[in-house]
Image 1 (tube, rainbow, N blue to C red):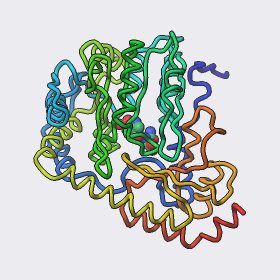
Image 2: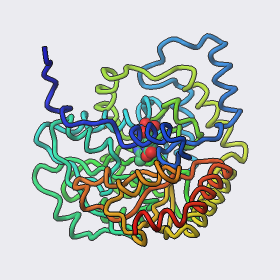
Image 3: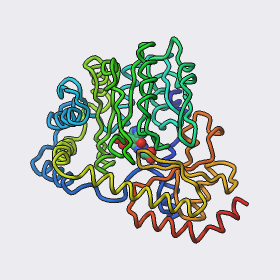
Length: 395
Ligand code: PMP
Ligand code: GLN
C-alpha cells in the first residue's frame, strides 16, 4: 500500500545542509558547507555537562527550561542591553533555535496568514511557515552589501501579514542589519501591528566593531518581539541543541503552549552545563577570545578564496562568507558546488536553496569558517593545486 503523506510535507526534501554534508563525506572533501565548528567547545562547559550527568540530573527538565539557565539568560540581557528580564516569565529554553522558530510561527500564525522574511532566507523559515499553512513573502537583500529597499518591505505588507521574521547577524550573507534598517522594520511593525520574530543566533560573532542591536530594545518593540538565540553557536556545541526565546509574557505564553507539545522539555544536563558556561563566560575572557579567533579564521579563508579567484563579499557577522564564482562561468551555484566537492575536494553550500526562486540566486557560494585554521589551509591547498582545473571546467 502507498501511504498518502500530508500535503504540508509532500514537497520537502533533505535539507541542503544534510545533502551537502553527505556528499562531502562521500568524496572525502574538506567540509566548509554545513555550519558547525570542527574544533572542540570550551572545556569549562563540557566539564559542567559531565558533572551534571554524574550528579544524576538526568530526568525531564521543567518545560520552560531549568531555572539556572533562564536566570543566566536574563542576566545576559541585563548586562548587555540594560533590560530587566524576568527569568520566570520572559525566557523559554527550546531544543535549538530551530524549535523556537517553529514554536513561534505555530504560536502566531493561522492558516492563510502571511509572514515576511529577508531573502536569502534560512531554510527552516519557509518550511515552518508552510507547515503552519501560511505564506512567506520575501524581501530581497541585494549583494554585495545586502541592503534592501524600504519600499519593497512596505509593499510586502498586506491585511494578512502577521509576522516579520528577521535574522541578524544574517545567515548566509554575514550582514548585520543597521540601526536605521531596524528602525524602519520596527516602524512598520508598529504601524501594522505585526509581531517580529528575530533570530539572533550569531549575536556574539561580530567583526570590526559591528554592533548587535536586538530589535526588541527599540522603543515600542519589546511587547511585539520574540528574540531567538542558540547557545550552540556561541559555545561551539551545536549538537547539544540548546536554544531559547525571550519576549513579553503574552508572546512567551503562546510559544510555551506550542513548545510543551512539540518537545515538552529540553535535555537537562546540557541546560545545566550551559547555565554554568554562561555564568563562567561573564567572568572569564571567553567571548573576547571567540571573536579574535573568528576574525582570524575569516581572514584566512577570505585570503585563500581570493587567491583562488573567488572574490569575497564583506562579512560583518556570523561564521559564513559568500564568494563569487562569476569569473568561472558555471551556470548555477549547484553546478559550481558539486564540481568543487567532487573534483577539488572542498565543500561549500549553494545559496540558491535559500531563495524562493532558486533560479534567481546570484552567482555566489557560501563557505563556513567555523573551522580550525589547519582545515582552512587544507582547503586552500586543494584549491591552489586545482586552479587550472577550476578554470578549465568552467571554460
Ligand atoms: N537560525 C540560523 C540563522 C542558523 O544559522 C541556525 C543554525 N545554523 C539556526 C537557526 C539553528 O540553530 P539550532 O542549531 O540551535 O537549532
Ligand atoms: N544552520 C546551519 C547552517 O546554516 C546548519 C544547521 C542544520 O543543518 N540544520 O549551515
